[in-house]
Image (tube, protein in one colour):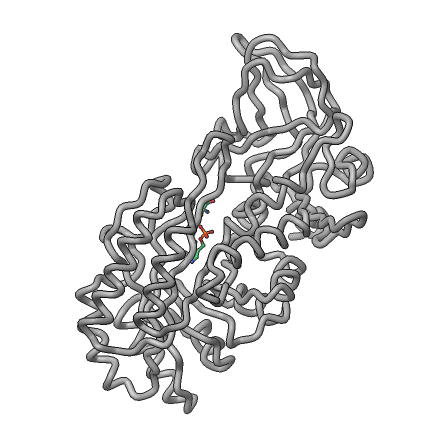
Amino acid sequence: MSSFKYKQKKLFVENISVFNLAKRNRTPFYLYSGLQIKENYSNFIKNFKNINPLICFSVKSNSNPYILRFLGKLGSGADVVSYGELLKALKSGIKPNKIVFSGIGKSEEELKLAIKKKILLINIESESEALLINKISKKMNKNTSIGLRLNPDISVKTHRKISTGKAEDKFGLSKKDILSLCKKINNMKNLRLNALSVHIGSQILSDNPYKKSLKIIADIIKKTKIKFKFIDLGGGFGISYRKKEKKIKLKNYSNLVNNFKKKFNCKIIFEPGRSIIGNTGILVSKVQYIKKGRNKSFIILDAGMNDFMRPALYDAFHNIIPITKTNKKIKGSVEFVGPICETTCKFGRYKNYQRLNENNYVAISNVGAYGFVLSSNYNTRPLLAEIFVRKNKNKTIRKRQNLLELIKV
Ligand code: LLP
């Protein structure tokens, strides 16, 4: 997180002191760096330079409209999975011809909107969905551009709860089903089969599974002899949540995709979420109380699992860093926990953590992706504010939810 740095023991985001922001804004709040988003986006482009892909940012990872607009201005399109996400992307200025729509359970209402707006691709995940889109398109007198989402039956070394490309996962169509659907689609006159798409999971740190699915796609193209205009290779590129975590080597994969593109003469689409936005955000929280337990101290934060779900949901590790550093240490173990009445409302255990006092601030790191978007009103707590920093300026890009509105009956 090169945009989050200590200067004289104080954490800064770009040119702004996080401590000063924490003093002026009610904690907890999400805090993002615009520079980091820019850097990630241009690194992504650099990695795939020869390919000149269309990047469709995965809106589910962070759907703040200001951030979508910011990414849109950088050139990004959007990968959406619901009516709400599609509308948000459009409202944020992203053009329909840069939007792809995935999801196994798209409703008629969602499909109608996507068809009406003429988005780039609706990625179909079942034969029934193809039939429904054809029917609606006919009624609306439209010719709809679709892709077929492949489930390549590949196991991916990631958290079992975020793998999507195994045969037992609910996503996509098997190779066999795609081969037979390609034939049937010939008779669905209001569909244009423009793409194959694949997304095998998230937080993937090896390029191996990607290589494997590329092979399967090549095989489908050879067997069907269809000239697909687009190949949508999904997202899933992992980031380092821990210092020692190795990074995914994109150069090698990029070369493979480049050869693939040349061979099949198609436009490549990627749908990255986490790799663009994950390390751009922190969750700033105050130490409410410190309480001695039997063999550890509990550092009780004002942020709860409702504000940030990943540790409770996936046992995810997110390094907790102090806003002001000191050399003094707390002896023994500490556990950072939140106020929610659930045992899983905890954020991590550390040994020899630096000294903290009540009312000090800390930041939970790498929360830009699947952070705010997964938060809830559990325990009747309002959704948090989101603040965006660019150079010397900060801007509230989402106000903290109004509590009175929340408790209205
Ligand atoms: N495309 C499709 C069709 C997807 O389902 C996803 C994520 C992406 C793209 C973006 O994947 P990314 O580049 O962000 O890995 N809540 C979980 C992650 C769920 C991912 C769901 N699909 C987490 O917090 O780890």
